[in-house]
Amino acid sequence: MPLTTQRILLISDDEHNARSHMGRPSFARAHCSEGKGHGDTIMRHQRFERSAVSGFTLIEMLVVMTIMALVAAIAVPPLTHRPETLVLETAARDLAGALRLTRATAIAQNIDVALDIDVDRHTFQSSAIRLQSFAPGIVAELKVAEPERVTASHGAFRFFPDGSSTGGDIVLRLRDMEARICVNWLTGEARRMKDC
Image 1: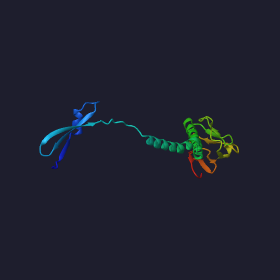
Image 2 (image 1 turned 60 degrees about the vertical axis):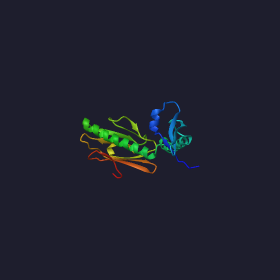
Image 3 (image 1 turned 180 degrees about the horizontal axis):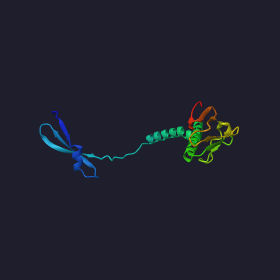
Image 4 (image 1 turned 90 degrees about the vertical axis):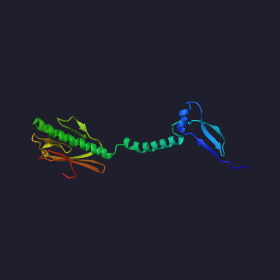
């Protein structure tokens, strides 16, 4: 029996999709021919269209949930406990801002304005600023001009219409951290510095 070769020609997917009807199983047409001119036979193969189902596998979902749990475990503790550096920085900024606003008020209204600071009560206020407080854990050391000192832990920084002040400095401490605010007597400017 002689060996014959067989060729199968497939119709392209685009051509096939154009001929098939949506929603029904489609068939691929193949043209088969056996060598030496034995007639052409058309074969049909059932082909099921694959639906494009998108989604996640269970493993993918578990991996994502594990990553989210790790991120939450790392991020939540800093949000629940305020770092001590943040507490100290906030108090220093609030106090420096109060000094600047009191100076600006003295210049704008052309009057003497004093920022009163009570270290024991952890409070400060002036005619330009309502009573404010800083964290009770902060230990403050006040260095003001003698005429502005009320007690060892209570004093004021007075600002004049020309912008100058009585000068001095405030040191805020929280455990081993320190923030220092210096008030220049000549310019009245309040600055955060290491040494006044």
